[in-house]
Length: 327
Ligand code: SAM
Ligand code: SF4
Image (cartoon, rainbow, N blue to C red; front, side, top):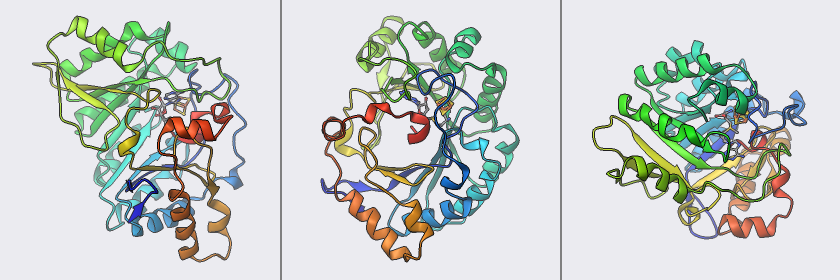
């Protein structure tokens, strides 16, 4: 089992499979994109499979596939198939912009991938297109509804962006009236690859909740798992639920159970920290699996206690883009 230097058990890995994306969300990267990694710097699917096996042997029981946009990788289903055969891996999930997932929905269901996070920051078409800088609204909306009606556990991630989409918070919430879906409102984080200046946030989780409360004063809090980053709520009579994620306020560090590995092998022990090591070349060299595992343990043994501490330790961390980190 992986346990960090603050006695937190690490059983959840967010594994990025690419840093590329077919959208250009303005809170994530500049319009022209970032300096994307060359293909040979990205893990191969076989390497991702091997790495996953090692992590599972170390007690990881949840792997979330992320990116960039994971489905820009044409060979992604090969990885899902391999993960679905891993004994000990209880939860395989994916975070996607839902533009390219359509052809894979049936197979994902067969493989037992249940938890799908769909990023959708507007219910209004123009707002969606302005934020993503692409015209994929219909595809995303239709795939999102299909995933819900096919029985996946769908969570919609909506970043509250001042002067951009906050008028969509309540209309987005209406989805939970009709569908068994969870809409989670996230605070913006400073990882936009230089897309825009970031000072601080205007819409923190308290303001989001206050805004929702004005329209729905009777919402009630739900019990959430201890390691959950979201605080979750239900509006009486609504089929779904909603949540807020204080990703910038960082109220959840005390119970953090996650490790991030980028598509190029960077091991990131906290979102607000710079990578502590790179595992790709080690995996490609003659080092044995045991040595790779040892290095993972070493990185976990030197984690910052909170995102604030990590931010202090790692100046310049805000220059990166979430498309390289994996969210
Ligand atoms: N492309 C996929 C997607 O958008 O769902 C997966 C990768 S994306 C980097 C993972 C998550 O990070 C998404 O939910 C996205 O909204 C979130 N994200 C990206 N940039 C962010 C930022 N600056 N602040 C907060 N969340 C961000
Ligand atoms: Fe792409 Fe996801 Fe970043 Fe949007 S948030 S640009 S969909 S990686």
